[in-house]
Image (cartoon, rainbow, N blue to C red; front, top):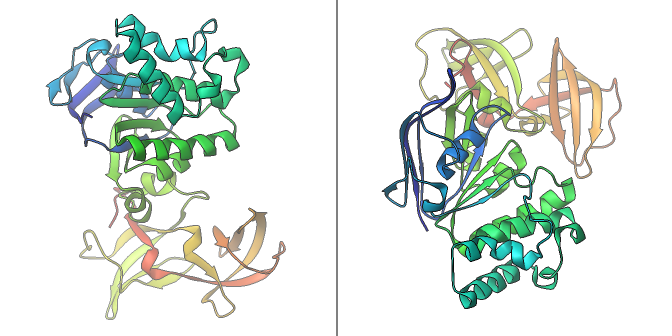
Length: 357
């Protein structure tokens, strides 16, 4: 197992800077997920670690060795791509052993590694089949197995589940998590799917326009987003945002807007403002509760049944708010309801800088 260290990394395509001055450390045995929208630079960063993209500036160390300009074959990595990239005329066994055979590894060692990897991924019964005889999930298992058979120091995954249907994605996500727990290997995983990031990651790196927005454990990034972008990107449905003003009252800080006023005495500020400031209040849908004695009222605009919960969209004072509701009697469009806010779970952001307060 190896760690990865990226220092002051810059990557350009022609005159366009895709990544500039990026620093990142991946600990040994960590499952790090690079999360962000399309075009944010997460796959570019992964490919630079793999040696598939040239670096303009900065350095990449793998296992304490400078690999900035090393060939991909010298980096001790195993990579799984979004497409399965299997050889159609080779059996599963031959696909999984291809890299080992090219490297000139002894036949007995190749057979041992393939057998061990097939057992981990439940592919033993499929070793003599060809890719055309496999389902999408089985093909992706073979692609993962081909990387694992290398017993590399670092495994890189570039959106490996994107081509699968929802059920298969859920199943393979669970298997990847168990596989990491079993192997304890260093893994770096790229995705735009927040559910994958939240469930798989030891730490999440949220990226935007080639820059790191926040790094932290999934719960930390979700509960205390560093800025408006992170707050809005994580969560389904997304965080509710209400523009307003932060003022200091005799009893403590308070948020006021045309829609609602909220006492924020217990709020933990990152940096408390000295005077009144234009802010954005963020409230996760699950931190709004429908209650008969709620402080505010609203009208049901839409109800989305989600099986074990409902997403209720409310109209109140010109705002549209989403609320996650459990164990609530069936609500109908145009119903009048009252709601309250869990003050301990709100987030405040500066309107100008968009940074967390």
